[in-house]
Length: 276
Ligand SMILES: [Zn+2]
Image 1 (cartoon, protein in one colour):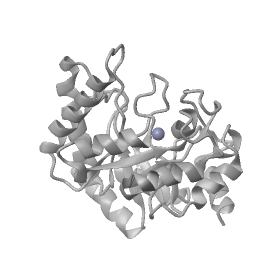
Image 2 (cartoon, helix red, strand yellow; image 1 turned 90 degrees about the vertical axis):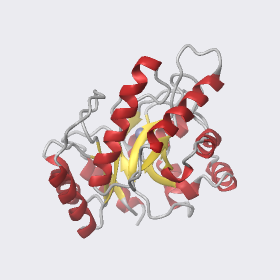
Image 3 (cartoon, helix red, strand yellow; image 1 turned 30 degrees about the vertical axis):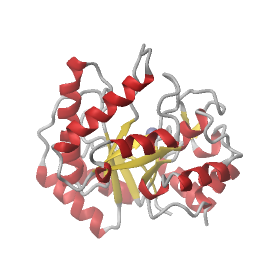
Image 4 (cartoon, helix red, strand yellow; image 1 turned 120 degrees about the vertical axis):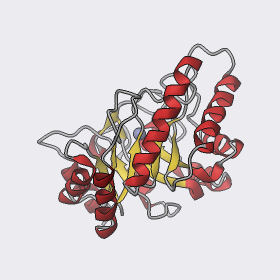
């Protein structure tokens, strides 16, 4: 299986790809630019293209992740920034040969009407994608529910994609910590989630998984990632999830804590042994 982790671009995009192979990853995720800012980055195109070439030669699949302030239902005064930033992320991801750019499902704070949030999200996506012709997709990620239940279900991801003018430019990224924390997957009901996903044709557009354990129990609505062997999702339940046959050859990317005494390299090795 194609396990990997989030990797820093401290040494550039090519540097990140080389680091991925060094730790035994067959996929990785990176921030195309400063994760704390929406400022458009003048990126090094050669570095990005070298990354794409390297990944092709070494059979690495990659995804990018938008900066944290990217909110698809931002206030009107922020919206221009979000749109420019997301287009910039798509350009970088495209140059790096990545599958797409992960963006969290929007959350509308203090909203009396959730419909307004969905409508604004669709509007933002239409705006961005009308200006985008590259191969990199927007990958909508499910929420954990820490700011309310919006965006926690497979139905919402599927519906938003369908309701935009450009569904072919949109795929999904499923975060296992979030789907567990939200209660959609409680650890024991994967078969039901799988059936629901098949019925909705969710898996056809699932392009990546954020493979994280959860520090908090199911239905806690809390978003705290834990290492695969040490979270509230039991290792057997993770194994059941990974054994599921609905996944294509997609990246399973760790966004888990990593330290010297337990690195992503160790965690990838743990996963490979688990699935062997
Ligand atoms: Zn995630």
